[in-house]
Image 1 (cartoon, one colour):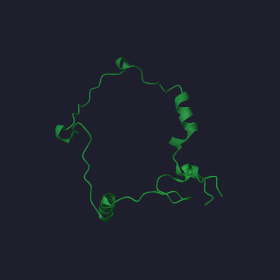
Image 2 (cartoon, rainbow, N blue to C red):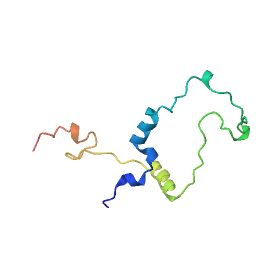
Image 3 (cartoon, rainbow, N blue to C red):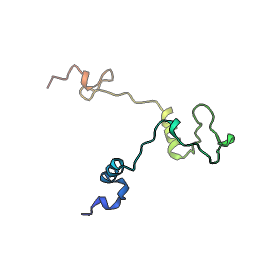
Length: 102
């Protein structure tokens, strides 16, 4: 479409702006926790009922026709693969003894 992709991104995502921020004299990186000012705001505790339990979470699956077809196919006997050169079921084309033959 011959459009400049940079016009879709805000200036905060540009590398030149980030370099300017970190190289300025007003930027002071955070130090060790002992240098932080004391916090005087509210202490927020998580709701105990909404915390996740231990282990892998259980998945609720919504079954549709496609899932049922997959389950049906798993129960069907599989077809044996055969060699494309000699049509035998014991091996495949890579290990066929007739590989070099015309």
